[in-house]
Image 1 (cartoon, rainbow, N blue to C red):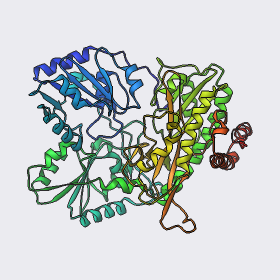
Image 2 (spheres, rainbow, N blue to C red):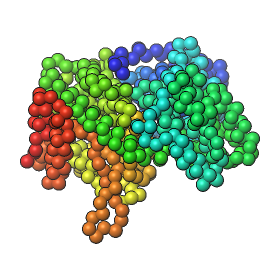
Image 3 (cartoon, rainbow, N blue to C red):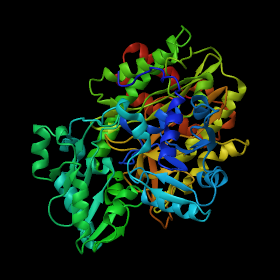
Length: 603
């Protein structure tokens, strides 16, 4: 299994007490503890799970502020229910971002003249600067101090850093040699008048050098940093124990390697030059800017040049994505057919998640799952990023909904799919709200939009049918997806904050939802490929549209056809016909019959 269902250890209140004792010894008024490591990716290895160790909250985004007498945990709308379930309410006040502000909370609980400590390796330059400015207005100082206090308290019990091997990513999957990617990046640097770029995002380095790793669960990256000069070989700073013979041969002609400890010396040498060094303030830790500041080098604050290039999938990666989704679609149909047969036979959430992973493994091509499977029945489905364990495990019950959000990592592509399934007969309310979510899903899937359209421009279309009923969901509508890389890949997304234009070759999720706390959750997710659209007669602007990559039926039992417009019903029937046509030849008789019924036309 690629995932564990062990219950988290019992909360240990002494950790907070010991941390406060350490704070008092260091004369620290408050401490900020983010869910982050020095690479500032979404997912972190066990050695960097400081927030979970201290608070019990295991979500992928959050921040705690610890004062000497009070503490607060800040999470966004995806995690409010989960945080309240996992965190000791007597020790931590759980507050929702962005309505609640860490700055305001600090100002309310600390006096002017107080100092707040943050680790410069765990905050981007942008976040640290904005926080310092906001606190200064309140008469409070933000002090960036190395030597993490949580690590000091955690001590020898803290897990060791990961040492997964570096693995070359074959050209038949990458689609473009690393030499070409490096040359193109260096050309961009020269065109911008920049002499070097410091890369801090692990997936950027993996993409640029055509390497993969296993340092982070479910995301095949190597935790490393890199400096790429405008001319000459890049340097990658990585634990040498991760580089075996195959990786050494692959990297020999591409880059020089050095131990992570050499990075600070390299930055110091850059600092003393007259070079112009590019670094992304929105993704790189403020530690890097502090190392480069004060010398003769000029810091060019600009975006990671790999980010957009990586998001625009090449022809090979697009073919791979289609193949991966067909393979995954077959697995999903086999799973959904099995689920229908077994759901009322005492099946529980863990068994359901295990079965899905087992079916994917039978492809013999599964390298990993792309995230811990969200396998939520009844009220657990209302926890947006629910992760089942032995303490929360529920049996699927008649009259409830079951939400399963899962994905796979194949060498030719990364998948992510959510289906909501009726267990027995759904209620009228379930069908009405499911259909409203489906209407939003169809609105995005069928969108035709001019080049230059951003995710924020499409987000409202996914919510309109819910808004009309006074409903909404507290997460983005879609996120970018990598090619055998991160299942959550920036910079494109569909959300209220997405300012990045969608471009051909980008792969993005389409996942509106609805969550009724304590009852059920609904989400319908497919992955989409941004594609060139045909110019309509009389058209004047170049247009884009989406190709739906995901292939799996949407539960017809939850659809109220009278709520669908004729064009929406036509899309649904056409999608189901396509799913059946592509996947039926790959299935055995029993599953083929199930798929025929599951994709039958709705009149």
